[in-house]
Amino acid sequence: MAFSRPAPFREELARALPERPFDIAFWDGSTLPATNGDSLTTFRVTSPLALAHVLRAPGQLGIGRAYVSGALDVDDIDAAIDVLDQWKPPALDTKQKLKLAAAAARATGVVAPPKPPKAELIPQGRRHSIERDKAAVRHHYDVSNEYFAQFLDPSMTYSCAIFSRGAKTLEEAQWTKRELVCTKLNLQPGERVLDVGCGWGAFAIHAAKEHGVHVTGITLSEPQAELARQRAREAGVGDQVDIKVMDWRELRAEPFDAISSIGMVEHVGSGNIDNYAVALRNFLKPGGRLLNHGIGRLRWSDPEAGPFSERYVFPDGAPLHVSRILAAMERGGLEPTHVEGFRMDYAETLKHWADNFDANLPRAIELGGEERVRVWRLYLRTARRGFETGFLSVFQVLCTRT
Image (tube, rainbow, N blue to C red; front, top):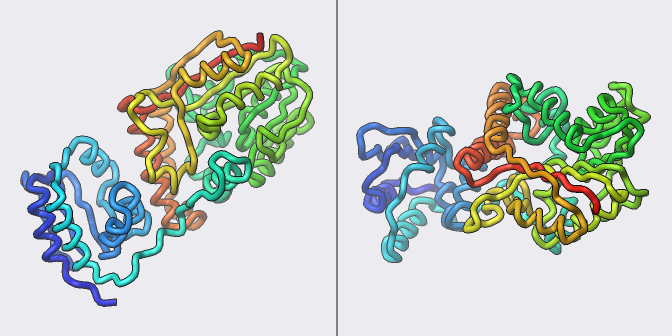
């Protein structure tokens, strides 16, 4: 495949972006320097395929594909995110956009549109059907258990840790979170607890070991379930922890004394949240307690998720507003008794996860491949920025069955 030199595109880009606080380096070694004389970072267009991806899917998805494939790179991912947060590109009229697109097309020399990276998932079927939810969750989680161990704490707790109660390390903060959930649920020895979206069993093991309860955990990931069962046996609570691979809509069980739903509600969706609340209510004995811990959007003007997250991180993920969750709980026959937000705790959690992941990049690449690692490095940082800037928060909503 013969590629044209990027000069015409570089010149058109310079006209379209007359003020740039960053450098752009192209595949032939040429550069488009920052206009302020002090570049904050360098964006590297390592292949003309980066332009082809953007032409095929203009906007966030095309740029995301270029980045995931390696055709677009940055020398400092944190600095690049800072720049994109602060820099406001000029508005381009239709004529300028067409000129830029034509110059990009000439620079690529690509005859056929490039295929999306292998790490991309395009969900199939009815949104939030059981089968589609299973495929979406497994896309995220079924990389390998060891892959997630590269950034989580030893308990394998994949949800917001709580540092604001005095914890100094990630491990301490995750213990604090799990114990806080148990305390809010007022767990008593011998009670039966349902853990919806139990992951690798961290909360189930904690509740069984520290509070003497019996926990039934459900997850959609068989690798998660296998490790959760093993960890429960190793912790000496194998007879108190029962892990099942199923959707919450498939569960048939006698009512429980308490329910924990930690990091699960984000996958339910606005169309299913009312049904979810009714199901949880029906899983509870009269007077039973529910603790729903989940990410929520803070701004009503923002969509549930962007196209990059939809295809690469959490397909069909839908952080809802806490008011919507509360409304569903009330409609479903649950009485909200306490709501607490932990926005900055999640920002701190994500910082620890990103640092851990970067410290283990070679092994992470071995386990998940370069594309998926690029997704994760960006996801952990942009998620943290979302909590820091007030786009997202995380809420614990405590309810009782009336």
